[in-house]
Length: 68
Image (cartoon, rainbow, N blue to C red; front, side, top):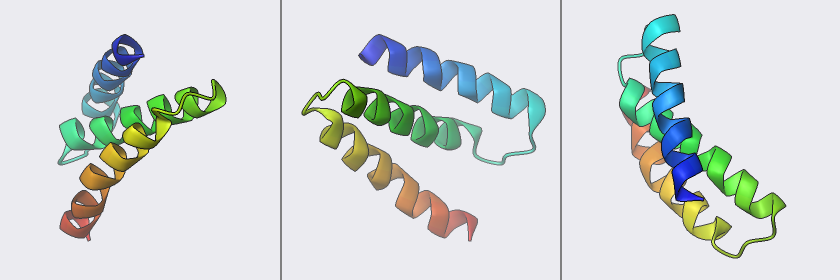
């Protein structure tokens, strides 16, 4: 659950900082890892998947406005 989310966040962060020129790698990796977690929970039919989707969108929507 949350351990997988944390591992995904750190892994995606290092991939973004090492392989891309993202100006917001912490938030980009946060959105990606929370979406991956939500998909994983949805596949396992966990009701908590909606919390992960809501969290992901709360971060992603302002981030998309910031990035244009």
